[in-house]
Image 1 (cartoon, rainbow, N blue to C red):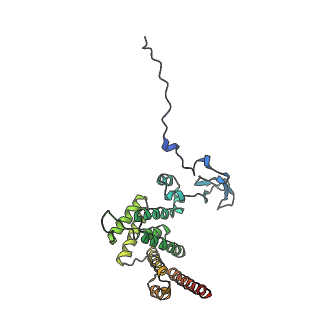
Image 2: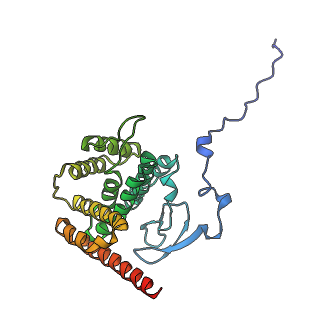
Length: 272
């Protein structure tokens, strides 16, 4: 004799939204006509078809694993799901896209410094120089950009003076890099460079030399905005302190551009 109950019908499986959630860039509903494209295989030249969210594809002709050259990771500089997204990418693609870290570091630098526009401006100017020096010298772009952005990060607790010692700046930089899940070896070298910059210690590495020169060039560029007439004497004073040939060339360009602007301003004033 039964109890009059019918067998329970299994309900729907609970939805795991972490698996179904997509950002607009990955959701095909938002895709346009250029979301599917072909690129030549770097090994045999055969055309390989990609959907824009595919990081790699195997060439059907020769079997080479081809990396999607058009895949854009710019959103990872600000998206809170960036770590999950990047964690699913193949190692070879992560290696090529490691300079994405510079964008995330730049964002964290600005969030930390907040309205300290002087330091934000200095870091931004120096970062432009260090990128040029790195490309010319072969310095590690992720390391030198992270070092340049974070070398003068200061923490301002409520009602206290800015943190400014070398040790405290290293601690602040390390905390940011750990938050961004940077490689341990990258974190270590960045901290070594920042410590050296603020203690006057010279490191025998192209990464340190690139950061050293970029900071000096960024500082000079900021100073010349207020006193452009000092371009030539300040340039002569700075030249012997630079450690890279690329840094010295960039100094010459900077001084020449400022002098040229002064001459143009003078010519316009004479015409008026």
